[in-house]
Image 1 (tube, helix red, strand yellow):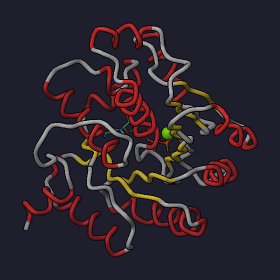
Image 2 (cartoon, helix red, strand yellow):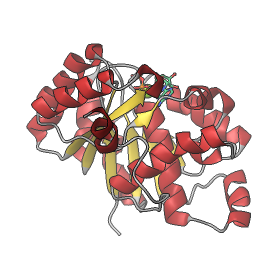
Image 3 (tube, protein in one colour):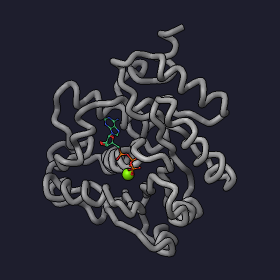
Image 4 (cartoon, helix red, strand yellow):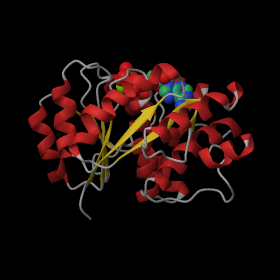
Length: 251
Ligand SMILES: Nc1ncnc2c1ncn2[C@@H]1O[C@H](COP(=O)(O)OP(=O)(O)OP(=O)(O)O)[C@@H](O)[C@H]1O
Ligand SMILES: [Mg+2]
């Protein structure tokens, strides 16, 4: 199977690039390797340098490095991980024999070189975006000036929508995205405290405790992975956080 390289990009800071890269990596490992329940603990305990999935950080701020180190200490990283600072090193990724590589990129306009290099190597781009007007212009800059001119397939995913805030923000954001004609993932990644705490606690979604709220939080990433074509199975029925079902409620 040829390697698929997925870049997670938005030059707006704090929109969830690192959260999405780490958790898509975890979920994709889970659906690809899918060890029986008993083996799963053991596989995670040793980490997995031979994992078919890799997360690469190109962010000089390296928050995924910090997060990964904590996961490695706590339960073990389910994917291979590397920090890459030299753009030339990105050209070597495809030779590693991985199935999926998720590349986390910097959230600023400084040093666009590393983002450009990642985009030149990738198969597709995922653009996380917050459902708030302040996120619109910076996201548009990244898509219109940096991603779209390269002709790479990309999709926007709304991240950190809080259901308690109600539908108006989501609706407005979906309208903006539709006006811009950007392809939008149907899956919305909802805002959960457990996602915010996960880096400090050394967890990725597949290692969350098995309580109801944590299961809901992780379901969004399984739905996203399935929608993006990385495989897996999800509970039957309409998505509790699908743009289609949510906006139909509003209508
Ligand atoms: N769905 C979510 N629910 C709750 N918290 C979230 C969610 N997504 C992201 N966060 C939190 O928001 C903050 C920013 O997220 P993250 O670091 O993933 O963004 P980023 O785009 O990688 O930021 P930067 O541009 O600085 O690299 C973090 O504290 C993270 O835990
Ligand atoms: Mg980040």
